[in-house]
Length: 152
Ligand code: HEM
Ligand code: HEM
Image (tube, rainbow, N blue to C red; front, side, top):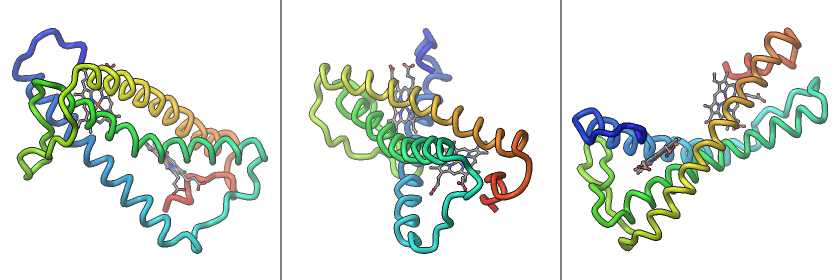
């Protein structure tokens, strides 16, 4: 999206959808956190068969994923709403979300950089997270260590 030179119909499709699906990710992350809090006493404990470093790493990556799915869209929203001649943030049937931040080139540049780092850090966490799930399925094979089956 950002690598496209032209400001044409395709960009006109990519940017608003990037924004509205990003806002949707944020809403789902808030709902996830709310449900997690409500059912906190019923959550299963970590698989006992994981080694201590696997437990620490997976917990750390889960916490980072939760934090980044909340922070990244907010930074994107901050960027879009502080851009002086920005075209706003659509959200499906709601035409435009309110732009709550004052317009400022400096704020835009700061949000732009933070949004980018936050998104790439999230991507690195997703790669680690999926690699972990695959390792437990393909290498450890079966039993409690195969955490993928806990999803169902
Ligand atoms: C989980 C949600 C999101 C992810 C993973 C994400 C990820 C990204 C990434 C990887 C880029 C390209 C950065 C670069 O290489 O320059 C980007 C750009 C952008 N994002 Fe997001 N984003 C999310 C949510 C949002 C939201 C909610 C908004 C606005 C409401 C938004 C607005 C933008 C804009 C305007 C750009 C273009 C920046 C530029 O032109 O340099 N993003 N986003
Ligand atoms: C192919 C893709 C994915 C697979 C196979 C996968 C697999 C899993 C598994 C097996 C668990 C449960 C671990 C356990 O029981 O201890 C889990 C939890 C989790 N996953 Fe994923 N995942 C994927 C994608 C993602 C993505 C894209 C995100 C976020 C950006 C994510 C965020 C999380 C979080 C936050 C938890 C912890 C949930 C909690 O404790 O409430 N996952 N994932």
